[in-house]
Image 1 (tube, rainbow, N blue to C red):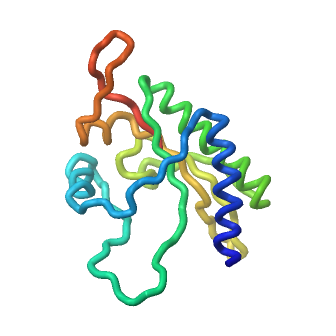
Image 2 (spheres, rainbow, N blue to C red; image 1 turned 45 degrees about the vertical axis):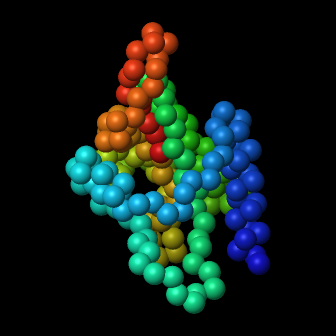
Image 3 (tube, rainbow, N blue to C red; image 1 turned 180 degrees about the horizontal axis):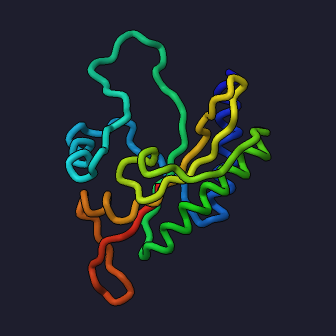
Length: 167
């Protein structure tokens, strides 16, 4: 199937790029309990989950679709912010060199950014009808999601602190 072959080539190329940055691939759970999604909504103003809700499984042969999403955790705000910026540059390089997409790199306005993000960076391409197509994003999340889930780590001073995140 061509779709799977294209996705496999994309996945392999991105995996090599991510490994060079010290990022390890992980498979995350496909099904996330609704209570965990609701927890994010309670702590992040404007957060509106954009996901598929499964109520039952029918006779459909396949319902899978592919996407790539990365989440990182950092000791400092600067590390997380810089990583988010570097990732949008990686996505841009990938999309331009491998997929031959002409792109514009930018930053979303506060009204456009991902709810809960301090900054959202984007790569966008112009379609034939003159509309922009968002081709990828990277977000600096600060500590909002870590605070929502009570995430802590032990720092170099042996203190439990809240990490900074990017997505």
